[in-house]
Image 1 (cartoon, chains in turn red, yellow):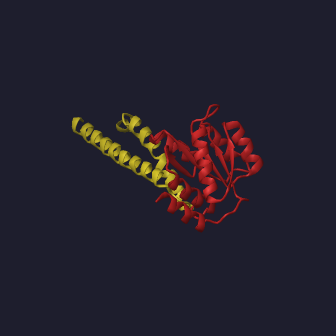
Image 2: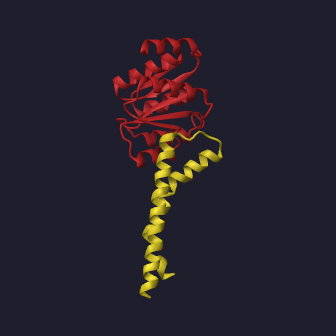
Length: 141
Length: 67
């Protein structure tokens, strides 16, 4: 079933390696999963392991989408979002926040600081691929 | 005016809880997508605001009775 879905995705996706997706995630397992999802969509992935390098990479590479983990070793998702939104290069990039937390305060704070989407971890690959495609197209965001 | 002073705490809480619905409305009015997770949070906050408003009205009625 999964293999069939994967093949269907591979046939229908618009492969565009010039589209960059930045993953800011400190957990290696999650980061690899996000990377896999980005590759299924046919885009190029960049990985930053902490908030500071994530902000720098976002400014230097101007990715179309940023997948941001809420809890990072050096700063939290809100701080990263604030930084991203105050810089001209990254002010309008789509940001997807992922977190193990699902209380309303965290969700409100994320959207207040400019998040475009929020998901609770763990997230399945299928949903992630669909959301990445939607957010990169910016049809709704 | 005195009636309202005891309700300051409720009013402040309502103000705080209005944040999520306001953000949701702003997104919608700008023609932006509203993710389901945030729509649910904003809707729950509205329910809580309704509860607090009803509580405030109840308090006012009680005070009027005592006066």
